[in-house]
Amino acid sequence: MNEISTPRPNNLDAFWMPYTANRAFKGAPRMLARAEGMSYFTNDNREVIDGTAGLWCCNAGHGRREIVEAIQHQAGVMDFAPTFQLGHPIAFQAAAKVAEHTPEGLDRIFFTNSGSEAADTALKIALAYQRARGQSQRVRLIGRERGYHGVGFGGISVGGIGPNRKQFGAQLPYVDHLPHTHLPQQNAFSRGQPEHGAHLADALDNLVALHGDTIAAVIVEPLAGSTGVLVPPAGYLQRLRELCDKHGILLIFDEVITGFGRLGTFFGSERVGVAPDIMTMAKGLTNAAVPMGAVAVHDKIFRAIVDEAPAGIELFHGYTYSGHPLAAAAAVATIDLYVRDELPARAKAMEGYFEDGAHSLKDLPNVIDIRNYGLVCGIELQGRAGKPTDRAVRIFHRCFDAGVLIRTTGDIIALSPPLIVEKHHIDRIYGTIADAIRAEAA
Ligand code: PLP
Image 1 (cartoon, rainbow, N blue to C red):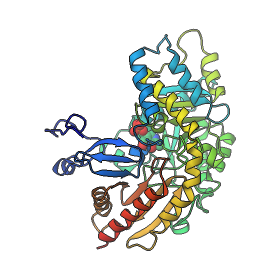
Image 2: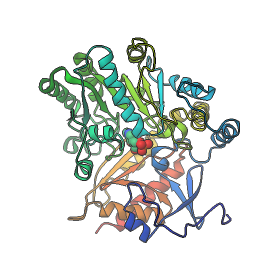
Image 3: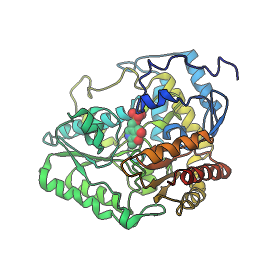
């Protein structure tokens, strides 16, 4: 590799890195310079197996020629065109392609640039729908403890993560939360959907008792990834669906992580057997090659908002880059690739091996839980007394230095490899993690 293709920064100061311990990173930077298939390569050309599909997003692996060529081609044809009161063909193609794979009825697609924007867009559409159907008292949004819906004000408000409240204080009003579904005492070391916890959905009845008919929507991730891989208990999402229907509340699934094959089906909703009214997606939509998010909306919601509105703009919402030509080209090529290579089915076929590998770590020191579903696994560690996250961060560094990229959140290791992962990669990933866990046993 020459210097041009693996640039070395000579100043780390300017880039305020997101969700990063900036001082620690800049003291000992770990840089990725290129990527191909299942691997990253560092500046000094050391291979690092990708155990996390980047950030849960490069589901087809890295540097896929079909996606790269589609982006290059589109950049030459038309770099940008507005989608406000104008259109361009590839954005419509991309929307139709997404709609081929969403649950029945969810075939109206609104494009955003990220998962955070998709979450906020979904919440706004839910509010607009309730007004359009004459339920303007329904202004309340229900999230869940330990939910993650990105970093916009809507997302952090319905999300259930303490540090957002601690650091920023102000949140959206009219928000409440369901309890999270993590029951370690009953469900530790579950394989697939845990047995206990369907009843936790009944908390929605309590919120309705409290807030009456002011609730517009409930938003949950089918599987909560970012807060440590919380797999939905069997029957929980079914129950939530029933209660939303009973109370006239929309159900939003945030499928930013669970979309595009991660759970062994095109969308997580198919795997869990529950269809929401609105679904968000991002990440795997373009294999992360160009930023893009989307919201799939049930036709009844679209019609209520759009068909019933007076002439003019029906939904006062949109991003300069909604349906950006390069992102749309990447989405079309990506979805074609998922279909051609049957990557969701491949993930399903690999799930058993991935699961066995995960649970083989059960008896290692400080491992207090292992949970998995699809090609996602969480390995929870006992944190060091008085030093939360220290053990996991050190394990992350050890793995990286030994050539495997993992992700940690709190003292939980979260794995989500590209769906092209082979058995030998899985062996290598778990073997490296096992060594690192042993080395950090003290
Ligand atoms: N929603 C979920 C479920 C996510 O996991 C994420 C990111 O991890 C987001 C939303 C935010 O997406 P983005 O970082 O693209 O804004």
